[in-house]
Length: 435
Image 1 (spheres, rainbow, N blue to C red):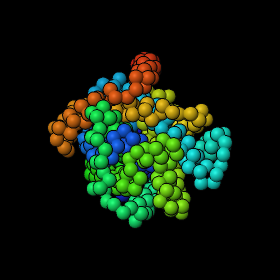
Image 2: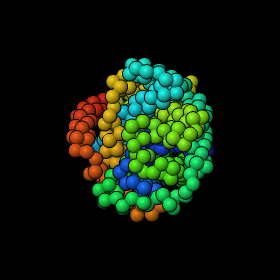
Image 3: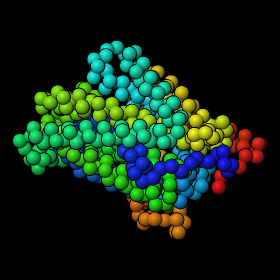
Image 4: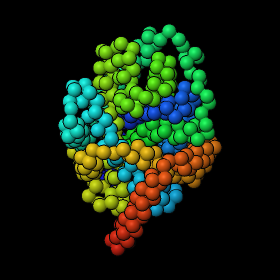
């Protein structure tokens, strides 16, 4: 690999944890928790913990792989090295499609919350705001990792402060305690239980952004495992206290109703408990969280595209590093343009379900790759990877059939692209794997 194709190691443990939190604390905490409450009722907390355990098993695999192969690309890179080129490509391909849709959804979510705050009406006005957010953050990320990390730090601090303000206000407004309001509903069915875990699992997966940025992390063998596990632990605590507080104040049914009707359940609860100023602060935190998700997805997606371009699975121009900023600027701009087009469409109702399917496939391949690591590369017992593989493979069957159809169609399209790219590499003599 030439020096012009390498990224600079700039991230320490604290910065890596903040990037992970910036990827997680978005729709998961502000919307998805309410939807899960509608599926499992007041049993939401054990479901959050079960989803966290599955995420923990996957995190163990991601951390070991990222420490062993600290290169950009995440499971795309690991799959290529320890599984097969096709499985590695499939992981990268699905990641690009799913997370680009998620990024567009985050942009639209930011526009939705901004419209609430300033009482902006009209569909195209909202889409225009989302498009502007994509443009601004694309150029921010293209400017280098240091600048992106500084903005992400501010976003995470604002988001976490708004969540703690919400939980404190809920505790002051409630005459009961969690033991009196949780587990009141009948125990959910097995189907509802698994569906709830699948939905919550997706809400945790932002920790993987640390792995996709592995080439830019200092001392990766030590930093990456600590950052991933810290991100996951902090997220679990925030999910528990926010969800528990919401259910304690309004009940699981009302929490779900707010998530469905308002798409901003925490703000609606703040208004219900007669805290209008808190509602504004929560909305501000939600806006920051959506921008954080968009920023971090731009970072992660561009690094996966960069890795694929560097190996020849995508056009080579996206595999170049901008020398002045030590960042894959072309890859960032291409990803930004793709997200811009998806945002322009303005309707991404199935994006989250599609993301759930592809994320489960992605992490199933992550666990499979981890099981192939040599003994000296292992940091943790194999049982975590086995449980992660079984859990992801099993939960993938619980998405809607139409999502299966779309996902399989995209895999078929990616297969055609892969075969064409392999033929082109053989003809040009491009090496298959970089050291």
